[in-house]
Image (cartoon, rainbow, N blue to C red; front, side, top):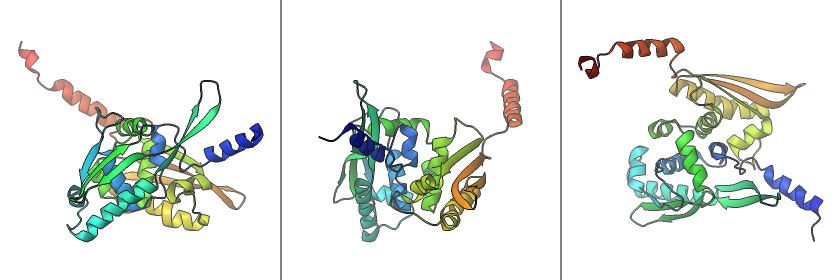
Length: 270
């Protein structure tokens, strides 16, 4: 029999796996750093099928032709294969660990998957169903956190930019103009590279963080301030502040409200 101390240590090791651990819906936005850019886009396309009326157990359908059209891909066998391989990777690489507390107080972790099944049909139709455990998180994520439109996600080129967009959504509070994201070097690398990869801090900042920051600043009218956190000469983390310049200022909101107050309403004549 495994001692309580050893079993507790094993639990802590599982719970430390940042790239898989999902406590609440917005954690999904930070997961799956191991996916490639196109796989992230296909996953977001799947999320776009979710509506406010979606329920656990619903089967969703998308067609490969629609995916090709949306992402500007040529209709050919190579891109059919590319889409099929993306779904294969989504099936294999979207493991989730969901912590819970049992009625008797014991802690546990549910080891599950994002999808319970994906069916790829020979005519290009794809059917998929989210798992019983992940479904509610997906629906809450779509309802409360994803404010980017699908066409905006589709225009992003870099995998790292897509990941940063999702981190932005996960950390922003409502429609706040400023969002702060803090994390250790290990956490940032888990988010961007997946749990199994590690880069030197300078290389990671240049080839991942700066690539993502520059694309978001260019395409989403954002200002991003990235601060490297050091302990002595050693890089131990990063702090990022994102300003969403798409958000109206207080003055602009007041002006629009004043305009609306002067508009003629049919009830003025009754």
